[in-house]
Length: 249
Image (cartoon, rainbow, N blue to C red; front, side, top):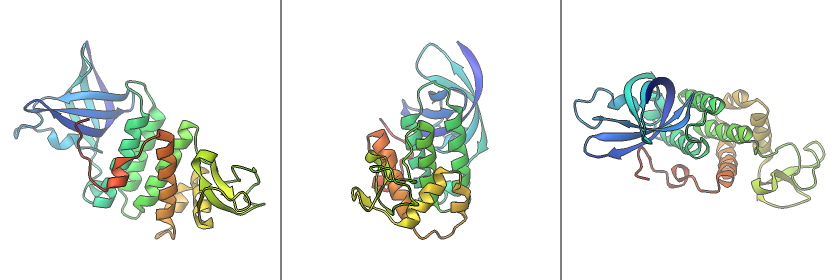
């Protein structure tokens, strides 16, 4: 049994007993961890506002023999207030958190994934950035980190490059973009292909500076399909439009 400190982002929370709450965290040093905040649901609790989903915090945890670690101290690093006061940005942040929840392994350090998540929330917290583009860029970068990003530089079937053919279809299961000659998948605009290609090649900042972007929803659509196919499940935060601040599952 031991105490230690870590940085983390709250993914989700749910009730435990009369006054406690389980807090699921994406931690910088320890992967996904499940903790308990004792007495957090009491009106006298001084930490309840610090452990809302999407908050980035510094914690002192006590790791005992059980599965749940105990939160002893918590300080806010970034509350991402603009995200939490805007419905679209909040739902976007929760959709990002849901993907991290699925990909991040229990107590297995994945610092790159944590850093990527923290940076994406900072982008989302900037009111000049389109939430759809932030989400798309985040999903595409996560897929790159996983080694399964779609291609947007060539046809996934005949392998001809974008300088040789028009890439007018998209199918993540096939590998990404598909040319008009191979004619398979879902139609995609040239603007969307160009933007996805830029995002996959370090140009997300430039794409985010285009406001409004003419095909932000289209880009988000294909990035979401790619992520859902990779996870082999639908992301409920995206499909229902509801706010999932807590869950009982």
